[in-house]
Image 1 (spheres, helix red, strand yellow):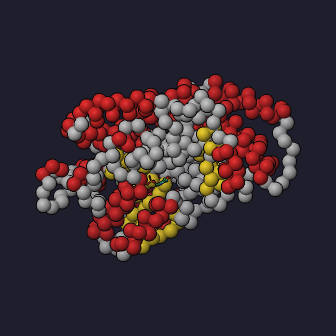
Image 2: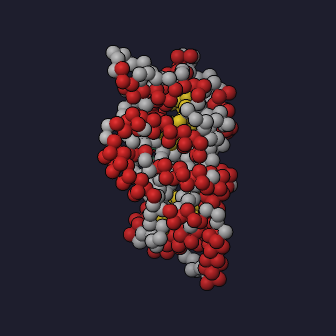
Image 3: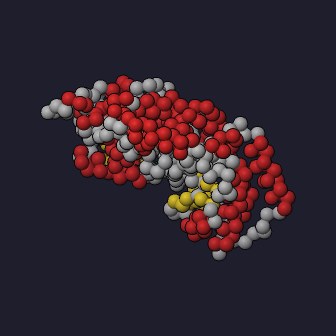
Length: 421
Ligand SMILES: Cc1ncc(COP(=O)(O)O)c(C=O)c1O
């Protein structure tokens, strides 16, 4: 497809819009608190791996020298045993709307999804043997789909698939048609990893509950960028990553939320010593601890959970409502630039246009996007690519500026022009 390059007037208008948005952004000061913000690199992948906070280097050095180096194994009694619960409560408070005692840091997202799905499935089937189905959508993240298939195989359950459009996600009417007396558990992503579709989590949870099902929410793409009100929305269980919008670092451990009303009735399948009623009695048989401890299995990954505290501090300072406002302003701006620069080249927006239904990233579709992504990475412009033809523009609200967004979108335009034949 051919088209004229943008006129100078358009270019000046976009520059002026980016400058005005940066100047009036109440959160603009946070960007400088991240490593690398001063460089010209454009980072569009904070929805996969957030930038490191600058405070982190000192936090890690202090931990090595004073806590680990100074206290050695005494650190477990003095603070580390409680750290997964303390940080979990802080995630609950600042990011997911959960009262204390319902959120804990433990394993990877994948392992925690397995533990929660199995626990919920077994409890439901024990209550009512007719409940054998796990409901999940076909465009959910691979780990979510694979786990559901594995659990169905292990337990003799069945999977009920929901079809969703590539540029959307699960809607109330689609879920309503899929749940019923056979449903044990529903697994949903709050923000769809491909399209960025933001599910109406409160309504979907209610639909599942009215059908007698429990819901497990995957909050990977929402925790830290989209307000979540786990308690007020009546969530049953939820799991989320900490290395995306919570900037915990590569492979930082995930969190799990279990509503207090369910905790005593759920037992998860990885029965390790850290989840036992009395960790140090080392008794002959496993008995699950009360409360959230029963969702732990082995030694908590303390080093991996240090860094996210810096972002939780920033989120508490900014407030998740302001973070969401900035996120919406960033994604709306990216869409506007895409309409001006990329639509004439045949690029389409494969994310919800309705801002109320959009999470923190925008996906742009074009057959050349795989090549475009590789090209952009060479130039220090870093989005990511998702099949079949999607370029994901992830706009982490605390660390991304409007000028950075515009510079990156211009690089996308130039690259699409080079690769679109
Ligand atoms: C939506 C979603 N769910 C689950 C996962 C899996 O997380 P982990 O690799 O930490 O187990 C990811 C990872 O990116 C994800 O984006």
